[in-house]
Length: 216
Image 1 (tube, helix red, strand yellow):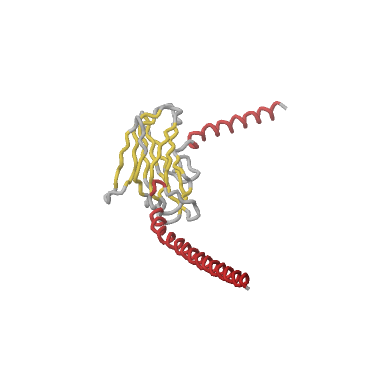
Image 2: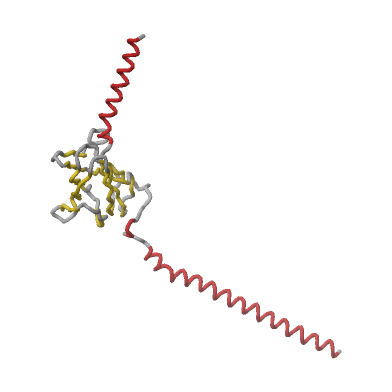
């Protein structure tokens, strides 16, 4: 009886060890939302957990092809640097500062999504105070996965930052709508005048007939 119990206990301890070992990999850099519409200005949130006993001093986030960043949240205590491609498009965003153990860095930026549907991968490199680097560039299910966003036509549009806002188009159509309403109002006014005129004629006729009867 003791042997099975010991085996069960050993199996449980081994499973717990595996879970503990997998915990750092689960606490990877994330970029949200996980789904976005194509060609849409989106507010992106970057979460960088520090799962080690060392401070994180640098985070570099590679910008997927077709994504166009255009505005960034100020982050007190951190500096932000943009690296660019030869055509001046943003290649990566680099945040430098001091993220202590067990803390999480949360920051946001605005960027337009690609026009084509499909997954985009947010590859990132996390650097610690001793110079060690963790490259979050692997595929889903890997030990160091990159965060993935699915670009889908069925996703709701954010239109964050007012980019691509169609309010101007609505405003431009307002005069036409007002003209339509005004035309309807004029038609009702003419109809009211006609009805009023008929009523006046009827009243005068009744008055004349009444006087004739009184004389008779």
